[in-house]
Amino acid sequence: QVQLVQSGGGVVQPGGSLRLSCAASGSIFSPSVMGWSRQAPGKQRELVATITSGGTTNYAHFVKGRFTISRDNANNTVYLQMNVLKPEDTAIYYCNIRRSIDRQPDSWGQGTQVTVSS
Image (tube, rainbow, N blue to C red; front, side, top):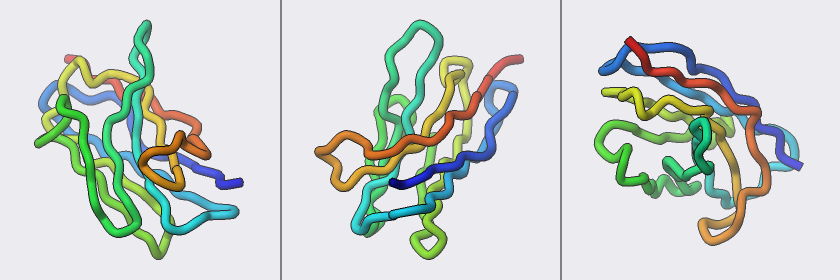
């Protein structure tokens, strides 16, 4: 079992930036795909970004050019740098880890609130 512990998040004004972190521990498998999803009130959870062990990234169209996903394989940590935040980015953000991009996540982080409001 892989445990994922998230940090970061909070409240920011439109146009601002935030950085989320997610540290993995336990029975970590390799290779792996780590990623971030989000869920806004009354909406389904949606994929935001993923990154493979080799560094290949993929982004949802609504964050492309504004968000950057990265990972530190030595420390089993994934990051999400969020710039030019919009009110519609307000959601609970969850990190996850899976064995391959075509599989469902094996583990999820605890979630962290991101609120974009003036």
